[in-house]
Amino acid sequence: MEATNETEKIISEQLSSLNKIDTTESLEEWRVNTLGRQGVITSILKSISSLPVEERKAAGSAANQGKTRLQDAFGIKQKQLLANASSNSSDSIDVSLPGRPATRGKLHIVTQTIREISSVFVSLGFQIQEGPEVEWGKYNFDMLNIPQDHPARDMWDTLWVEKNHDDSEPLLLRTHTSPMQARIMESSTPPIRVIIPGKCYRYEATDATHEWQLTQIEGLAVDSDISFADLKGTLYEFAKRIFGQDRQVRFRCDYFPFVEPGVDMSIDCFKCSGKGCSICSHTGWIEILGAGMVHPNVFKGVNYDPEKYKGFAFGMGVERIAMLKYEIDDIRNFYTNDLRFLSQF
Image 1 (cartoon, one colour):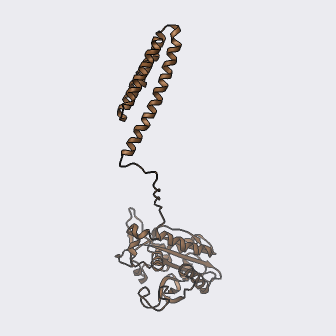
Image 2: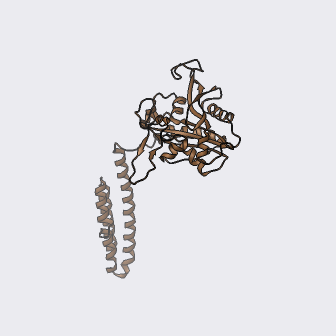
Image 3: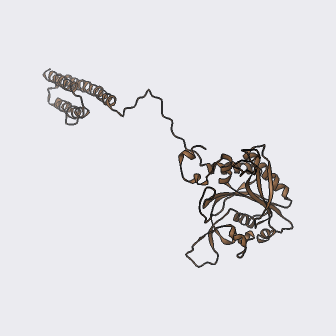
């Protein structure tokens, strides 16, 4: 009985000291001294074996019950101190406030425009392919009916790539996506219907309408019975889906070395409906792409019989399409990474 009374006295003293604790540091110190491996309760439990046999059961029961009481009291005190610390902190969370919505990312406006354009042509039966941005000169120029001494090479300000080995074939950053015309026809047989989106590079100063890096989408269709009417119908449908069903389309003769005849395609201004405004330079028309029937020399370069096969090709600047559609007045806005601009789309 004496051991049991002594145990209850120690338990009461520890509970009393626990009630006076007001910091988490003091609470941890109390836990170690009372409930730890070298603490008071452990000492009591170890001493039971030295008691007379008839006292051990009662002493052991009192010690275990006292340990349970101390553990429960410790848990309650710990929760109280944590709650007080949270309520007194300036960084505490008010769980009654509505949650803050997470910021959601989105696709870049150029990527959105590529996907929108691509979806139109895919629905018309075209496939999507990609090609290398570092290109051989023969694909960028020679196989597109632009030989070494051709004045048309001046139409593109080329960025040439320095090579570390002796190779007569020049390398460059492609100036347009048209090289994929030759690459695809070289490795395929008609019928062919593909579009090729990708980045192009030109050595020129940047301003509101020019960038040294731009994005193009090239289109190519080749078969035995393709005509200029197919070209017009395809591009007419594209313009209506992108710019609106009430758009009017105009084709005018233009020159591109790899097509004959070549045309530029314009739509009536969606801002002024053809009356004339600053967007269309007061002409009523906006040029959106170049196109034409594949030149016979391009067919010969890939061993296609130009008497048997006909085809059309077109190319458009993705940034220009986006600028026209969303009335963006400076192409440099696409690549300055200004979230105030990009978040609008």
